[in-house]
Length: 264
Image (cartoon, rainbow, N blue to C red; front, top):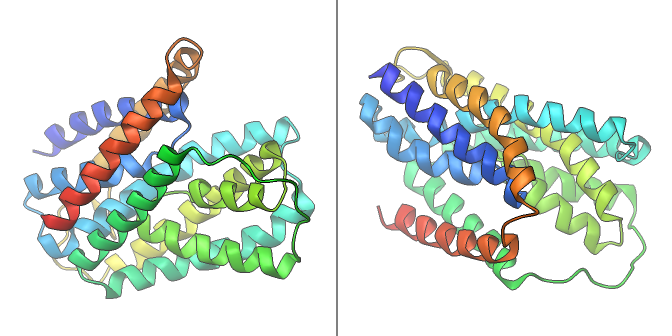
């Protein structure tokens, strides 16, 4: 059964990487719902399925976001003077999110994930245009936004770019710098979020073999191996396929998945 999960996650990682490159979406939006349905095949207890899915998704994002952040750094897309204070608080938020998740029931986590996904999908459908230029608020205000982003992203098993990029561009930051900062922050969200889930999962006696805390290693390995390989193909096809139409179709799909999670 472990090998079945591993090879299924290799296929899942291929899809995640391709869609990430094609549509620019975070892998957590796909990985978490998929693992919620896949992990029970291992006999994982319902009470730990959602934390395992979130933790494994975050652990995979550590690898994928690190390479992306390095690429943005080389292209001078990250204004480090502003990014560094935001990275500190987003890491604290992600760590807090993992501890909050440990206190929530599986259904409460599913409902939170589903509602947040529907909001993000609605934003994708609306294709809201960037507003007129605004002046960036104080660093403290941006730190509060980053802290909240870290908590929410950790509770959703994602890097947080879908929240941080629109927030930063709303305040007039260039899209290039917003994506660069969000990518750098995403590395720490994933790292500290997954460390939090590992720590809180050590006290769980219901975890299957090959788990480190709530992180399930066979699924993690399968996703990481294939997602990084297929992402460039998604980028390549982005110029050939109707990305806007595909993004809207994917948003509708996310809403249906979210509704299914809430009612299951």
